[in-house]
Length: 627
Image (tube, rainbow, N blue to C red; front, side, top):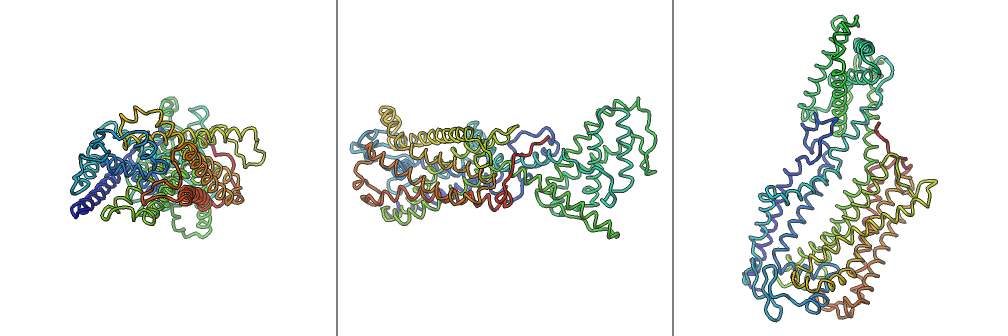
């Protein structure tokens, strides 16, 4: 390789890096835009909040990482598609497609005369390439142009915009933005607060007098006023506890961050209380209830005030959950009366425990999304690190000096894309199916680890899960296979030999689809064992079973390919560094599958054990339904 070509490769890598940086900088601002429909109960406050406000920082960062990784993979795939020689190398490195040159290249599908900007001579060698200078190598303009297109062009192109919005909405949904806060706030909205009038709870006698006045006036004017009384009681109590900081003093940096939200809620609470004082006949200046005013004249106002009361208590509950999500609810300093301070402290602790319990239950009910989100990141990270290590140890010597970094990067990209296509769609659809049946009313998901589970129900259920995962994984693998083959030999050539390509793809990709299905079904079973409190017994069985199952599937798939003739003689199979011995091919096939299964199972078990230790030991029953 000439010095100019080495410099061109280095310039290409620098441009590729800066293009990726531009994508990430664009993603930082783009990800903080809402993609969700506003809840009908909480639209007043949700409209004022950004996605970064609705989850704690570590959850939001993980969601952003998922979103950014997906966009980066799309960016790298487009760059690879435009640098066609890179795609030809890329096709040679993709697991299951490394024999393209033998089976669907020169042997079955001849090289095209011209495809995707590449001109070939009669021997099949590249004689002209758009975007690549023969003397200097890859053009640095390609990654920069793609990066600028993602940042400047995508928001104005409907198709690209919808793709970005879909990825962003998926990341929001998986991280619970805004469903987590909405679910907890709804549960808190319907949870009784207090049923009596104990002293020492941060309330004054006038508060209880006001509540009694509201209740009596509503009873005289409205039928079935119990819900209004409960809502009015919550408003008076939460106003005293949080807005006036009689019991809780929100952590100052957090309360300052959401001051505009609290100010809006405070203003509406003050306006509502003033109007209820007027319409109920409560004399605030005297501190007691008086005879109601002319009920016939104010009766039409009660319908409006009851609706306003419902809206206000919903917003107060969302404010409480927002503060608790960011761990900002702190118990205010005690008063002079020690007994009163002790009682208030006990009330504060019980209320915080109640809110925290509702938030943990929401996390438990939505565990499938959380596990998919984190398991996807773990599998992709393992693919990147593992492919770089493997490439550096076994493939680095096969690249020409100056092209080693690009070759290793392309190898890592190929493995990462292949891994994502194999596991991510199957995991998503399977865990979504499980979650939808688990949270349905009544739940229709049969947990095989629960005592009394019926085999006649959970066996067909697992078969359905496996078929869903297999179909989804196979569909995406076939599409990915066709994409790589078309990139390597041209669309027209593939069209002429379509059935040969499909036959080859089925044999090649069925193995990967079975692996994706195995990981997805195992993840669903791990969740079931965790919910039943049996994961503490079964966790090492899951690790061993998934690792051995994936490696067995890989080896069976390899044997099927040899029998079908995809790979020819194992000992003569070419690789990036010459001929591949049989033992090396077996190890290369089985070891990645073994490690993938072990890492996926260990991470899933570790996440459930560390995040929910009580459930890991004791299990949990059916989901808590919101009235």
